[in-house]
Length: 298
Image 1: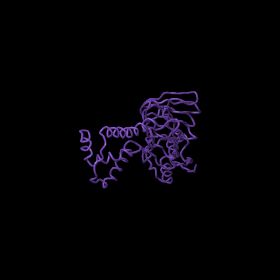
Image 2: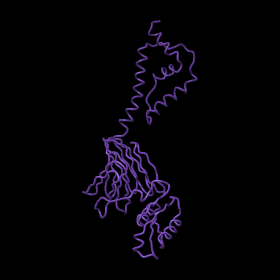
Image 3: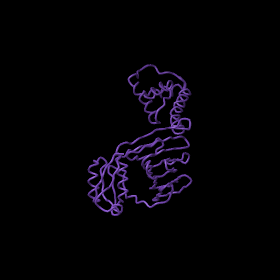
Image 4: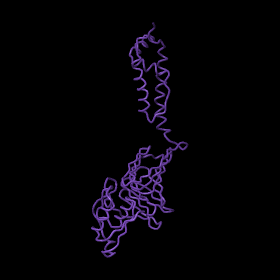
């Protein structure tokens, strides 16, 4: 026995190493979701054959052949990472999906590119991801935490305008019958409405009025909607009503007692559970604003 064969037999004296050797000759790549899954699939096959290890004579193959198989196996495993990191999605095979949130709750979404979306009640989002573009269509309200990728700009399209970003966190409100508003919590975005555009950075907001885009002052604590409760902090009554209407899918009409100018200038501080009944909300509003509230289904 030459030195090469001796080294080979010593290597295969380890039962687990022999299993890897025996399987490597017939191992073929199966598409998996990620590198870990591909490796786990291979490990499961090893474990499934654990009971089949016996004392049969060791297969004699040249040491150079073992190295060739090891290199081939490494190439297979490496190809998993290459496939899913480089060719994860491309123009020919984009990743697309549509998510509708018809509940009163906030729905948390994780996109394949690593971005996260908090989708508010009665809102819909669609995404189309390719290697060089991330296009989102929003109807309703959502908060976006965008994974940086300079090669694939992240763009949110609405019926009123578009928001383009490379990596940031921001809110977009774009319900069909309402004006567009965008608020940036960190990072930088570009808001485009028809031929108008504005750059927003941390703490800045913009909104439309009759298709005219302008910078606006928005208190980020005025309405807190990303949680189990809707919280209002000295919020104007119209902001309160609009937020409640968007969340519960109803229409509130205020009539009666207190003078109209007083009602229009009123503010409200308090919170509602997202599963709270419309009747409870109606009573709270009537007590707070000294008025009669009528509720209609949209």
